[in-house]
Amino acid sequence: MKLLLDSNLSTRLLSQPASRLAELFPGSAHIEALGLAEAPDTALWAYARSNHFALLTADSDFFELATTLGAPPKIIWLRGCDYPTTAAQEILLAQQGRITQFLDDPEQAVLIVQPWRPLFMHETKPA
Image 1: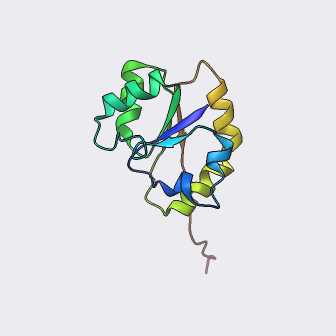
Image 2 (image 1 turned 90 degrees about the horizontal axis):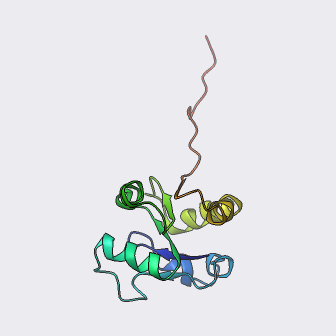
Image 3 (image 1 turned 180 degrees about the vertical axis):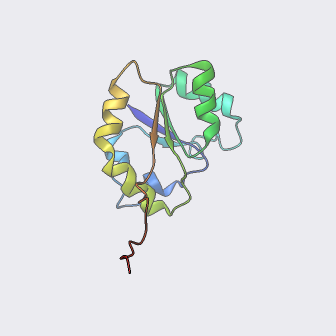
């Protein structure tokens, strides 16, 4: 299945030479490339549905639409995506198997992808 990237994600996720997302998910596009950058979320939802895209976003609004309207389209939510494009790409590539399983599962509507964050950054030794 192809991915439709929301405006809150960089076009470089699909266009930079080192990007493997475009080859892993052929036919994927960024909303800017389709002239939809100013479209409201509901219009993007309808476009994704009628053109067989899964929406890739860092915006919780699509999660809310998915719980209200259901799938299709499927939503892949990069939750807490306040990190560089290269980090987002690494996370998506590391989760490729999980994403592919999700896209193939007709029962699933939303996949939340986020980086692993350790609970404790430093361990201290008792005195």
